[in-house]
Image (cartoon, rainbow over all chains, first blue to last red; front, side, top):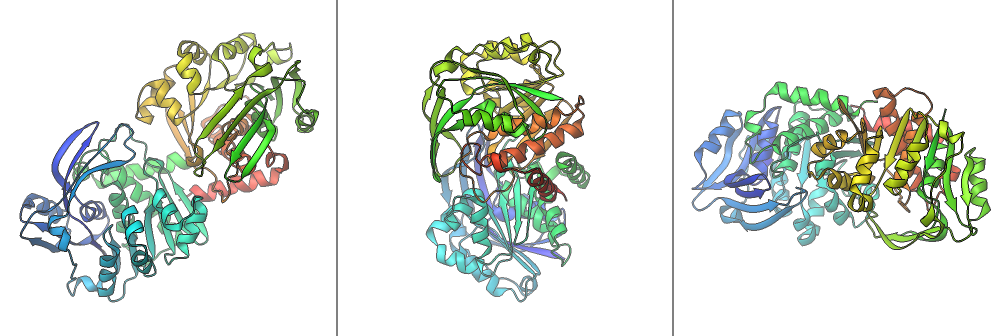
Length: 299
Length: 299
């Protein structure tokens, strides 16, 4: 099986206490694809400008990512620049230049419309719905979003959620979208909006998997060095969806293991800037961290 | 076996989004004793004023707590008043009146000096050391502290830590005491200060158990209602030390289970004001939450 991702491709300038990277490879679709590619074949839909270095596309090809949905338009690639203070908890955005991403209107190819597993990365909910409209009969649609869309387009986002099986969201966003401070009550409200599964991302505090009748909690992988948290959420989603899309089966046990694989891929992501660590990951390292997760939580 | 606790006994006035309690039973030694009493016999050392309601002492006696070390002095009981905003994450102190606690100089009885398990609740590190000095041959000494002591008496605290086996500390305090932002590096530094075990409390995010060669992560019990977080840390320590002090054995497996029991007792604590929920807990409820913790974390 394979997983289709629609999202941003970017050149990021990021400053953290560990250094600065200028115009490094970034974007939600990119991080997702890098992570998911360790588990399944990825079909990537996105847009870049004429300045996007070909070596980045070569990297994705080398990871056997289908880049036929990657459009190159005249103009500049989407750019984000931001930074993190000492605690690395929250990104401060310095500048966002949409550039060619401003007119991104994903048109899926005939092959992509037959996708069984779909990840709608954090983009305008109008676009997320336009993508779902084009897919014939998806087995799983997953969606990520952010404060900006919850505040600016709540109605569109709620319409999108009705067509979604899995929602990836962080703690503050969950409270904002549900208008409820207690996390467990908030997630119940989100589950009534459409998704049958909510994956709550908590950065350094791990993640929670909610279904109507079950709850699973996974820690973040303990790291001595976190150099750049950019892309952690999308790498998490990539590990999760990559694992899930290997089989048309959504059993609770499979979803639990998917959360663990998501956490593992996020842990590699934050160990270095951009996808630099992801580029070096081996399947053996993934399995080693999986074993460590078991050791970390058993009693 | 039994566990000896030295700490504060207080009358707390607390305001949370769920209501207000005035002069409710509180204090670190009280919460600790209430929680630990479900697992073992507790010897409590503390001081109250002439205004301390006898019904609170009756409650402790009913939980088979040895209150022979509870001194009643002329004057008013230690009072704390504070509150929590919507997110319930951090207490804001409005007023602290030390009253009789100002001159608290714990003098242990001959029986208490033979204690095998000792919990030094969050008090002046000079007093914590004075307590350890009096104990003949403790098997386990555990200590809790806070920002105030880390900042005002770091040298005394560090001397105390050399004589401690288990340190209970929260995330911000760990970073402050170790002067290191990365949590895992910070805990390594704390482990070099004396304790062989560090229990990192993370409130709604659970707890971490660190030993030189192992790490265990436990979630917070998922609660739909958190009415008052006051006393959660001491209830956690009470569940932990109560379980640990049942046997003179500190195996990794026992310490892991102790963290789970600590989390369980903290979860009961925060469900209502003061020790109101703790007063109604049954052993069957504790075992049910233990079972739920397994379900919450297995994969």
